[in-house]
Length: 395
Image (cartoon, rainbow, N blue to C red):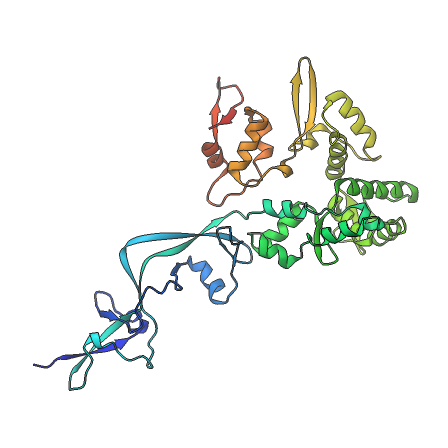
């Protein structure tokens, strides 16, 4: 009776299988656990990025790794399976067929056998997640850029210590679990600036001073706050001892570039400027609302109109007896992790009306979860009557 001669084939034999057909399998000569090989199940849209090596794994040794494309961040989840998942490598003519498959000399009919290199207990899947940008602000705040650095008044030893805590772009990529695009957006959101190759957050009081100098010069030189000539502004501020990079940064933080202008023109943003002066006042502590409004209006540049509505997401009011007080509570100071965000919100207030809560959660971006979903997950909603505003408390 004619016997079958097993012929070891690789993945090609399996890929070419027709529907309802079958193929025998056997052990590859190098069969083993192969812990260095991990199976990934990818969404089809991610395949080009992986094949063209446009993805990176990011995270410190004490963190769970994430996979980043240029624009998105993905958590890596292991998914076990009760079915056997066989890893069959491509054909390798340099590897002989395992003797256990019955290969020996003689006249035999060939039978194609797929050689299994590894049996995987499951696969790794990618789940899109929000970038972990809270760490970005915390590490940049280790060494804010202060006026002392400009004046050269810092103690040498202190400056040397400070220099060891500065971060280049590559340092941030290595430490922050976010895609390049998300990292750039995060730097912009916290008004960071690149100085001498390192990314810095400028000290609040120094930013107050630069803005004050810009506004004073606008009055002295007759500049329109709606048509600031970049070159002229920078040159004047440099003559006042402010580095050109920070003069330009001030325009970027508090202004918008005028589109379509023949030269580099900037228009100061009324809301951003007014918010900065409100922060400056409340940095010293809470105020009675009447006193705060009086101080605030005195600081607002001529030609700008300030209203309390501008401070949505920046301040909170509270009733103490018959008086209303206002204090700083900026959404920018809150964590981006939803659980941590809601925890801090309910430490500030046990109950929130929707009009007060909404400014503090609308920036939360969780892939696959809407704002309504976040509220259901982290809050309890009560509404005494149909006409009453809903009130939210901790779940």
